[in-house]
Image (cartoon, rainbow, N blue to C red; front, side, top):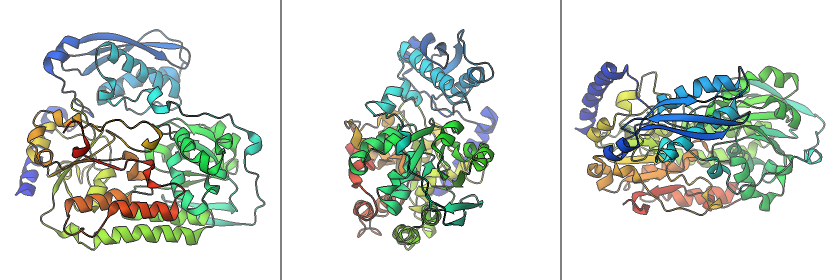
Length: 512
């Protein structure tokens, strides 16, 4: 009955959306208390550092707390680079009602300056910028170490003894000289695929990495340097978060190969400089996790890396372990069940901001599908052009009418590598939304969160296994996902699994 209801409701909301907004929806919906929001309506100014000095930005918010206008004052940003960001960034922020937007290629500092200045203007208005998916720079990198590069510490090039041609995740045939002396990666979490193959040498051979939104370069250093030594002295940062690669830095660090995952448009940014890297003898290998087939993508990545690092036997051992977990889930024939629980997924959702969702064709929606959940977003998004994207939102009323059995979140109390900081109390203020206390999932305590980056990591099997056990407790009564994760760390990683809070429930929350 619930599935039939969802289909009819989907048709209704598609029709309404087409009439009201041309099938588009904002990435965030501010639902603040009307009286409080009305009292804050107006224009407020905030300042932050750009590339060529301070940027003054005036932000106008309306009675509902929505950003309706952003004006950037006089500045000295670079014409044709920074000025492009000044033109584009306000539009992106207003359209998405979010400060978590893509920065303008080549204008990282100007783009971030605009974001930070808008955040400061929201603070002046009495708004909490985090409700607009903002992460302050000091929160990203607080107390994280930085180290000057010591060129003498860069691994020496070994004599070439052969070569291998690998087919990467995008079907590109890449011929690489062997052995590999040094390598670079698109973000630090990619090293988690290489640690099972090379152990401590995964860090000794690493000469460059891109940055992620959580300061991953410095976080990994803080986690691992006591175990592997001061590898940061030969590590260059080759990109900011969600930004183009720094060609000059890559050429300076001179890796034999750069391994690039698909997250944050990194494939596109890497291929933009492929000609220059090829001329310098630096190969690009593309991997794709979670990819279109999450239950296979990590294993395919391990096969590629096993060839590159000449550790094919170890790669096969890791792949076999992960295969076993997905085969266990598949053995229950969950896709054929007619009593699937309905599930709603949301990223970075708060009481006043509706975050993005995913259909079963992408991201966390794929994990839900593997675990046997019936994703309520599929009725609206699956088999549409939007199904593969990560910035779709569902109409709040649709979520309430669909009344999901389970709610899965990520990016709220995100626990990724949180052993490095003092753990804060878990809070799901998302349940304060109008009508949410009456949702079946909330009433039954079936609201859960996973560390967001897990989905694109070597540990992606864990949330699939954990959700399968939550959705079907009897079928998975003998399965212990947490013990399985611990076993993986014991066998293949250098540290224990307690580096991250992988999973949180409504029972853990101060909001419950």
